[in-house]
Length: 300
Figure 1 (cartoon, rainbow, N blue to C red):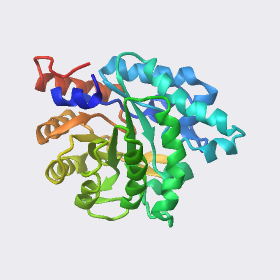
Figure 2: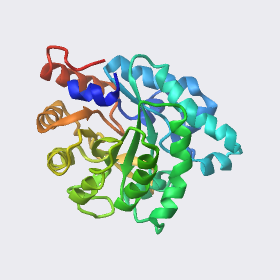
Figure 3: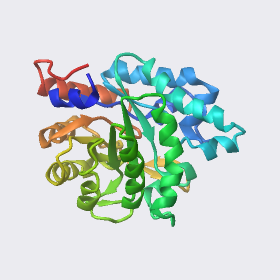
């Protein structure tokens, strides 16, 4: 059953933050490649992180390729053919975790800069330049045949347009999720316009938000359900915020089951967590969906 078909049967549980799960196991992610460094240095650690989320009830595993790029790998002395193999390995490692769909993560250009600019957008690049950056990454991940491409934490409509040009031409099942602040993208554009951009792209099977405050999700779900005919995907952070200057998280955890119930009731079909949401949070999401669909209509 394809992921799109599964969504027609009921909501699915996404996994949680890869980085926090790896850090909790003692791995240092201060490198510019972040979790993608472990694709080369310790792939077993990535499998273990995926396994923890599958055990918690995740039905979709998002690969550790978010911050991976050919340029970033090259700076570590990894040749292009080796880098392409690491993109493919990220998909294989997720598959090893157990029975789940695999979403190949395509993070924004700002993530590769490792300076927090994915929370700002407006990089000073044209849509064509962003398309040239993303195309080889997306093609390398597509070659490994994931179930879906996760175009995630996108802060800017221009970058979304660039990504959609690539996946639209390739015809690959994808979801598009923006990082937002209130009712706008991080770059300040109306979220209504951002969601509408994907409506005419047939290969996009879901639209939504991630890597944002839990309190911003409900309105985004309602808007996405109004603006597009696509299923809605949501996976916010814990509620804490990232301080790029100090490279530390600040604030308190506001990710709770009452909010998850509201998201599902509002129409969310893919639900999980992003940064700082671990297996316990994903287990709570799975329980909410189990209560909402007691007949077991949510496929695994």
